[in-house]
Length: 195
Image 1 (spheres, helix red, strand yellow):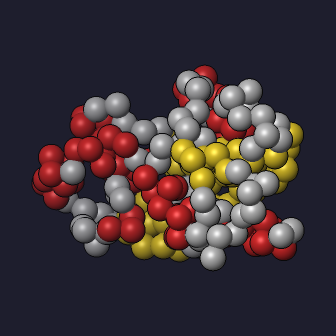
Image 2 (cartoon, rainbow, N blue to C red):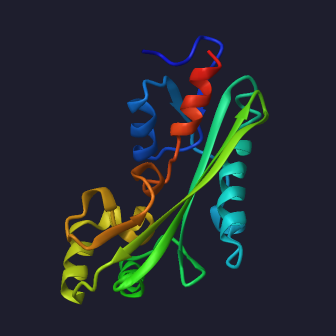
């Protein structure tokens, strides 16, 4: 079933394969367009909720002029450990350091969605997931990084939780959409109720 009439044109302000896959799973017709912001400018280390919300909002707003009559979905996710934001690694060395930081520790993923409709605020949400990474050996980590370099450098925590190949993650709180950085279910329900 197509959720949207011709009047509801959807733009996803992201090229994330995971977010595209989640939207498609709901039968949503959409176009993906990369946002135009430098995420590093909007990291507020002591304010993770503000950070994730501002990033999702800025991503949506960054393409608003190009798509003035559309629904635009901006989204973001951050990882918090010991009240500090852990960013995506810029190298395999940094990824290794991130693993060493998280192993044997609990951490939190905050995922935000910010939606514009015809250029104006329409809907937003912030969801939280809590996880625990078991104490994995350094050799295991190095082998994983070398084998999965593209994944390691492209996602938070350097590890795809939905494909837990090292069997090292325990989910303490939160659903898979939140863990994957795109808690869109309630927005889909809202749209369905307005059709």
